[in-house]
Length: 320
Image (cartoon, rainbow, N blue to C red):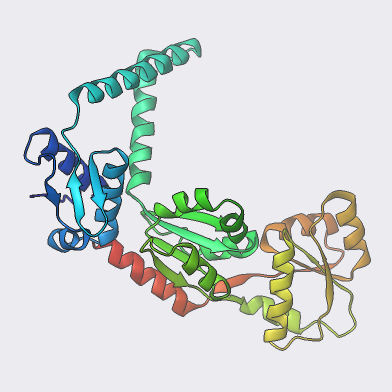
């Protein structure tokens, strides 16, 4: 079974594998009952990661083109039906016709429609070609801190996932994580995430988050006895902050916290002398106080060793 991989055409490798297998079945090169190479063997032959071959096989199996038999291997299920392919094409043409009619109703010309559809398709193609990294944390604030490190990386798409989503909607999250090549979480959640994705053969990086040095310096300057208030988005962030202060030896800093907005927030601000905020609420609090009180943004940053591990993993994937 000969498959050619083009690493420069922008088409995801698993899609290239899938399309070429389908083409071989359509042309009769592969017939019903033929055994496909094991995932690891084909990945080695093509010089790509096993995840890419696995994804291609899973999609072909979902379309009932191939079938996997436990302990025996993966086999061609049967010839791809030309009637079924034509039917899919007819459905797509109807969708396009409807879209063109809707566009005309909005005042767009056919040329406008063609231009916009082409640009949109290219955007989608670019997104599909990106390496996908899922970030899993228990609160929005630290999730943002994790993602921030690769925002400027080209060809990398981030997938944010809250730990609560794993517990409340596991089926949907597993579908989401199946699209990711790398999963990043913190040591505190590592065991739970590993158990959740067991059998998915995903690379996991545990990334330690530490309070930023500027944050530590500002907090260390606060005199004992000052009334401190923390404004954040989630209860879990407040818990993390308390743990971090204890870890770095600032046990003298006792604070109350709020996740509220509006009048309740204003009363909270009035009751405290110094305000600490999560990054997302820093500007909101600063604007409300108009310089009347000190506001400290509690920033978290991934440690450099963890960041380097992630960058090396991304580098290896880009080389596939």
